[in-house]
Length: 319
Image 1 (cartoon, one colour):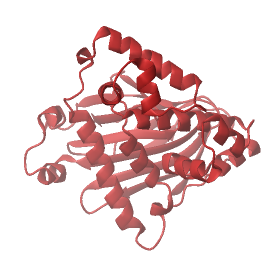
Image 2: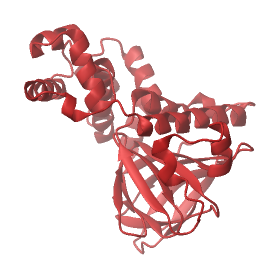
Image 3: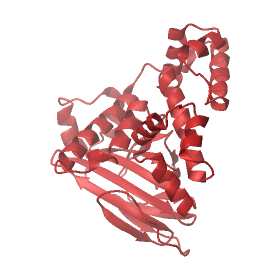
Image 4: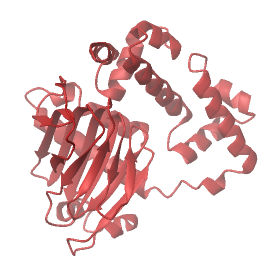
């Protein structure tokens, strides 16, 4: 994808920390981006940038044959609009599977947002071969062999596994002599995970009866406001009046996450918000989300966001 910015607002220099790629030097946007093509037909996009002003970035499609792609923000949020007007929110809580043949898609960026973005795409022919010549039924809508008019997008909640794979594309796996080999392997796993999530037929909100929906809503509200407390599944299940296995099943049905994964996600998201505010130290944030050891918090945070909490805080303090 080739990026074009139509903002005419002034900007300032941002120091990006992503390894590899080229500098993004557009009005209103500063950072780095990288587009890697692999012999397998897979294409990996990695971007890390800061929106210095509210603006739009136009996306030029680089494919000339049927394809399927995925996108997710590890940090920050933006809106992606297709040429037909369909708009999708991108964040660490919303992943996207898509195929948009015409150029003209636009990212809407919001001032002050640091975006760490991952996208993996593949042309359809090699992907079809990897599936043994037959795509899963739910992917059939992406397969139309007439290239030029298709505009399809479907957003959904990413799994803990997908977030971890996205983070791996920015940490030590993105460096070293075997860098390309590692990145290709992780990119393959990332696209496979997002396709499986899309094709998963197990989720059906109707399977959750009314009182269980209310119990789940009460538990998620409790988690949000008590991140520093003991949030073990045993304690939460007792509070909800459910067995541990049923509560875990409800989380998997509703959010595609286990109860423990949901709690960890809420804690990491809150930690990221507090660190980016620059008002608390790493130790204070660690304590606010229930980590008694800063080292354990730092490892979990880096796995999620691809950088240490100390670096997030430094960036916020220097801003």
